[in-house]
Image 1: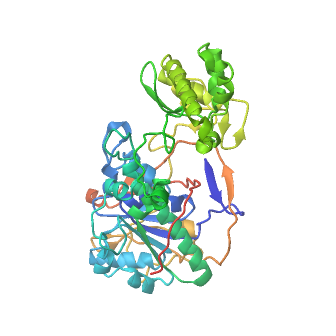
Image 2: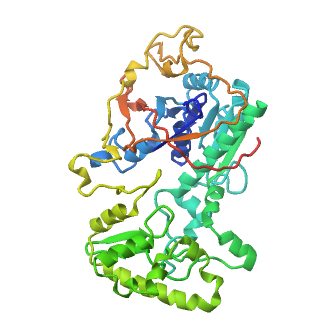
Image 3: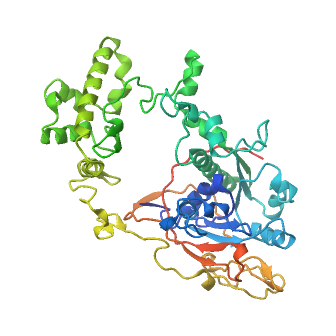
Length: 489
């Protein structure tokens, strides 16, 4: 696992506060910002974030603190309950805005304006504020107010047309790639806007369309239309190559199926696989020339040049088909777990480079509850951290009592919002430090991989179950890859 840090060991966004109003489509965006060190305050509605009720659940038992999907999207965030439509909470939100650098929201276009909380209003409360809006089709245009769950985003963005077997209808890609794509672009756009603000002092409204974010994943589909006026069609796992590439795709085992990706830069080579087949005495004629050299040369570079020599392409396709027949016979003799284990043992690859020892232990991994180099299973909720009630107080707030006590640090402030029985749950927050213009130099530091998230979730302090749950998480920073688009408001 990697942590993104500046040269002095602090997080790249340690001096940035983010107010997270995002629904499911945008929660990965704020997670990326939190992983970079930002202080992300998740604002949940009175009934709690609806994503808390989405499967899968830890132990297959539903509960507000048991959704693994929600836990994954919300590590490194703090959480409060706030209904911005209520006058008393509306005022509390504005006080939070006065201390924030970024607000991320996923409401329908115009909703925040209808509450008097649009970009123009927020920028008056906090000069230089950045509002990042994530919707299906952006803030303007003919489709701006269309409903856009993930399936609509991947369909209208074009990748659903390219996913799956050509004999089947278009397939929905797994794991809500529309939402993830929108969030990645939103995070990149937000970072760009933060850098722009560092240089100019100006905030921006970052407008992210899921459809546009997804469309970049169409590979060469757009170029194919522009250059030869042809539509790329579904081609299963083959990509632009019209034959089954040996080692890539689904293979039937004796007890099920595995998906292989041999020859990729981050995996085993065909030399590794062929050596195993030879050891088992099941390589057939692949162990002899010219098949042996052909197999060992199967990689992405070879595939990228496959069609450059028309005189030999038919012969190459025929040889690839034969290799696949032999490989399928070999895999059919193995169990799924054996294929998985041997793939890991023979790959000899990790993020730090090549090494002699295998990157995965022999099975079963669960015997000791851990794997060498991978850390111990943290479980859910994981290691104990201070309960939220130790950091959130229920106190009578004096007039104007929103400032931080003198000498308090950014990381030690209290956080609570809402009120009951004449008491106000008080937020004690210092004004965040404004970064000076700079070009940070990133240092990537490897740490032992751990199973995450580790969240300790406590009931609402005032005992009102309908107000959801607050969460506090340890600082689990990871390195994201991002790019995005910023629209000047």
